[in-house]
Image 1 (spheres, rainbow, N blue to C red):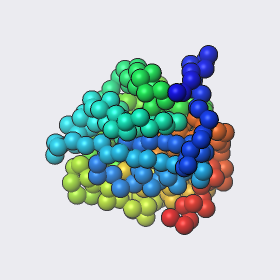
Image 2 (cartoon, helix red, strand yellow):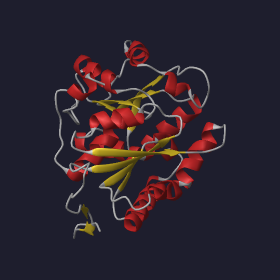
Image 3 (cartoon, rainbow, N blue to C red):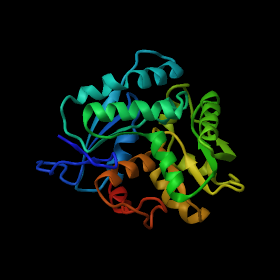
Length: 263
């Protein structure tokens, strides 16, 4: 079993595994998301292993799907049965915007106590990244429908962040799935003339939007941290099992450019 340290954190058992000796991670991602798994796999340390399960909902409405994902989180994570993960990530930032952050933390803590390993949501990971970087003012790039973008802004304002600039992307057809049709080039074209104003960091939100190649370019061009939901979630997971830090790719979390190049 996993042991709990005196400070409340988790101590992993000896990694006597065939695969994932550098870390074994679970990932829960929306059923139609084509981006979270490949990006998280690229970002995680090469000696780690990633096992994914799909968050499912029969509703055609995005708002209801997000609610279903959050409400059924215990059921979804139990699909992994008794796999002894180092941590599991919840790769659906949008589901967190409707939940009080303290309630979400209590739910994550309850899952951790029951399963014996930490459960990290993408929204929690983004907040932790803001804290590590010491930023309080953000420029938000959103691929969501406008109503979800509004919920996103309110979420970060409740978390004490100031949204100083907002870019609403035209994600494409379909309320629920437009984000999944985005490409790096479309994202970069939209951001080219975006004025981030007084922001200290640019956040590319949404785990379904491709972000890694955009981060590589924008970090150089904008000379400021550029984060994404997937970057922050992978960073939060990786730091549970080892030391992680900035690199040439990102002021938050580097070391993944070579893996991206061959993907």
